[in-house]
Length: 599
Ligand SMILES: Cc1cc2nc3c(=O)[nH]c(=O)nc-3n(C[C@H](O)[C@H](O)[C@H](O)COP(=O)(O)OP(=O)(O)OC[C@H]3O[C@@H](n4cnc5c(N)ncnc54)[C@H](O)[C@@H]3O)c2cc1C
Image 1 (cartoon, rainbow, N blue to C red):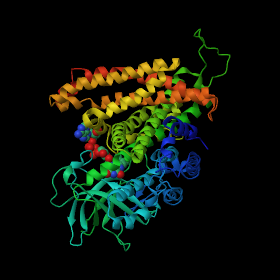
Image 2: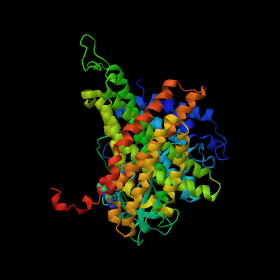
Image 3: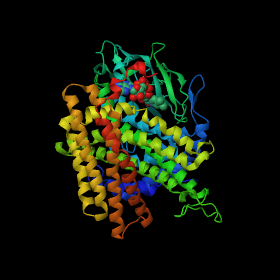
């Protein structure tokens, strides 16, 4: 079987670079140790090798489809809800008291990454069920919990998130699906939702939709949105008037169904309110950090899998001859492996630097998520909440956007074969494209980063992050061969301050359109700086492990981390230098462009 992930790299990142020993020493996670967590990850690896990866291409060739009544998904989807649920892939981060395994979110993230890399059409069914059951646990009544929690975490029922409507995608304030109060305290729902992942399928007894709707007469905008549980089937196994209208035909992730649902066409779609009326979006946002980290994780995992596939090809394919320093080809020699061409090594290093850097950023965010859970003081809670809030839009966006470049470079490694269906790279390229779109597009994440996260609590979040990065800079400056990289990163941090000072003239003058005009470029710049920080941490850890003479990793493995760190700084970070100039350019061309000239 082809290799789809390097488990050693994930373990190096989790246990060495991010380092979760402090989490395992807390009361909350004291029942877990590194050995047990390694066994958990190995069991997910075995499951992925046996049940996920072998069906990856097959699910692309046989997409989910609507048979006129129900969405028919690949038979392997059933395994997620049986074998997968038994392994704990739905219940891993849920607390013991609610029937879960209470595993750190960062460890769960590594497990999910293994599955994403094996077959990214499948883990979403479990991921959305987990997300929706977490909403129920956090905010629903005991009666609702009793009805759904156990059945969802054991895979008997699945869950979905129903937010999007035809006129309300990025702008959820425009949701019109309506909930009509009934005498018995329930609600009748009327409306339609589109693009619902896992929206319908034949492998579970019931699908529980976590749906956003407006209670009749509720205030306009986001303040009038409430959250409901809407089961596909009622308690007696009869239809709850949730009608499947169709399945979207997509360019990628074809095994993961994306469904159009109509609620209450026959006026008997019964729902129960979760928590307080008009608080639905607030509840949903509490779950967004995990969901957004999840999308970034999926993208990073696809990029990692694509790297493994193109690396294998580059080590097998022979083409052309090496050019000597004299510039002459020696035609008496046989053809060389393409990995010997500098341009192929550049493509591979770029793939590796982006994919592994992305995964490290994801795990950093997941670690802050865990730190927030185990924090006991208000000061710590505030600190980790702010760090998580700041990092989340970047952890969603960098892997999604740069992952596309990374996989595209993988296709380039294969030459013409990369464009052909018999090679897997083209599928990764189609699959990864969704990551920059769902769970908030790049444009929306960038506005969130610059418009909200940079300025919240008087700019406290970037200050806290700068303090965290400074710790790595201090460590790096102690080692001669790392000083250059500490200086490069330190300069970029200062650039972020300069950019914010420049932009603040707009926000202080109330010119928010100007302030946010290049938010996506700011996202690219800042998130690249954060990934450079991750590479500095990986390089430092590899350096220390190698010098300790007491490492489980080979010297080649550790050298590869230090070398890729250097690649990231000299190529990826260096390539963003023009962004600062563009963001601070007074021309502001996108604001002055008339629609008429875009012809
Ligand atoms: C495969 C797939 C699965 C999905 N799964 C789910 C799911 O499970 N549940 C669910 O509820 N939804 C789901 N979605 C919906 C997804 O979250 C939306 O497609 C996404 O939020 C964007 O909304 P939209 O498609 O309406 O695009 P629009 O909101 O129309 O955006 C179009 C473009 O305009 C930009 N734009 C919009 N508003 C602004 C603004 N204010 N400022 C700057 N730029 C802006 C966007 O960035 C984008 O580039 C899924 C979508 C797909 C394709």
